[in-house]
Length: 96
Image (tube, rainbow, N blue to C red; front, side, top):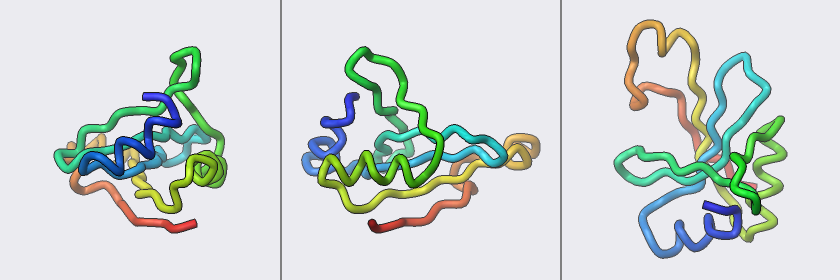
């Protein structure tokens, strides 16, 4: 899914823009999630995964596409270590 397709996906389907952060990492993934928790990552024009250096950078890209909110999901090594499901990751909505 390319960046320009994110707005189309959230307007036509029950998907929402999502920024995934892994604790202690400086890489953030941008994409959309559906109600079942399936994540589709954004890709650039050459098909490469969009990996960002900050949440702010992801917000700017979304805003350029006319999107003014995103769900931020923070995953931690502890969650992975104890086998927590994705339902237990910390999530919050941010508007910009």
